[in-house]
Image 1: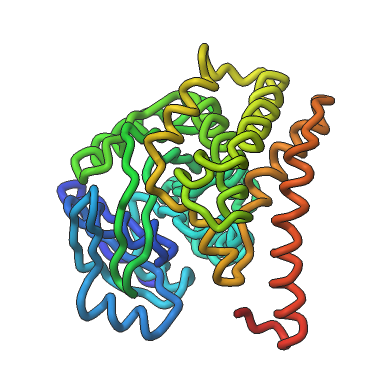
Image 2 (image 1 turned 90 degrees about the horizontal axis):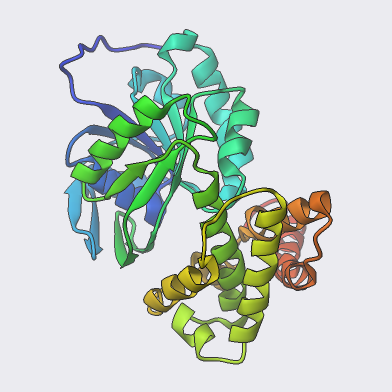
Length: 332
């Protein structure tokens, strides 16, 4: 591993793991104020990004020309890094952790970059912290949705800032505050919080209520809200909020009303789980409904609607697994 000597006057340097819609849009925005390295495993996509850069359009406009590396292991040569953003699907957490752990272990503890979970779900930040044995992990809760439009471009059709960054406590509040300022300057208005859990649960409950229903009905958020499936969304919200209360998570007053307001603003958006089901890719139900079910079992809450919806989505994931087994491990 080689490292480059950098002074305090140098601009911050970030890495982005994940070259889907979220990773591309993040790399484009970060490039406004920082040096960026992006991990791109697909050779064709990597060549396109190296040649033409990355861009995001729609409600956010930005372009950048990040350094491209073919693997997480190659980030060793990009050190020192300020932070590494994990912008993959939560289904890739194990793979990301397996690749990132040796990169971090090769560094002195006080030179570890922060790892930022830039993902959906309730537990991905804690999962990364556990799998990496790394305390310097923060979580972002994002109120925007992006769709990949090309190998190197994404479009943002949903943007409802502020976004939030923090950990389970105030240990790394200083870094979170500095990073929130930089992200805000890059066009992603972000607020630092000392306890990210209420924000994680608010979005987690909301996504677990809407995303699988949109996927099962092949619908946008607005189409779900205008259909009979709206009643199922209501049940999922009520069950998720009951679990949050049982866990002692304070989501504030009128949280259900606030969630319905958020969904109404998101009417044009089509959740990424819809694309996963359409494309025969594993879904993120494990970090959404399954997490709520696990917490419900610990607290004694009943979540029958989540159990049914999780089983239906899991049947799609089972079909993906069966295809990969039959084809010797190759995905669709």
